[in-house]
Image 1 (cartoon, rainbow, N blue to C red):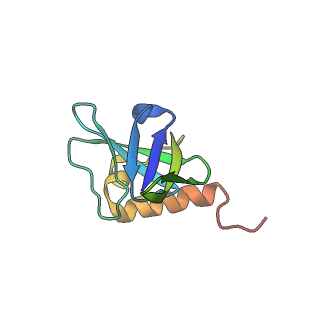
Image 2: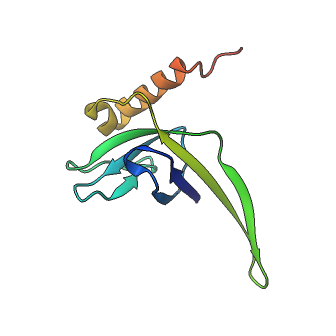
Image 3: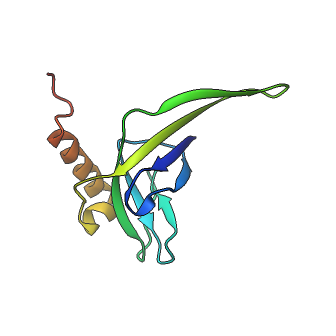
Length: 115
């Protein structure tokens, strides 16, 4: 589990506990203003939700919390910021199109290239 914070955009000041911390994350806002993230590979947005693309700010940080008699537990923390480029609604809702969009963003940032 990763304690996930959002530095700006619609999810600003929200904290979620997520199973994964991918480089790009889809964050949804429901009709009542509730915030959630589509961090699981099988997650899908509902028709009324708005979808925003966020990008991880650096690598997750890790630590241990220990208490007497209960041992230690590893935890991680990560921060996301609203990505400057947003996918179309279709790209954000379709998992395969989302994967293609994130790969294109990564390539634009020079990901996967040596020096």
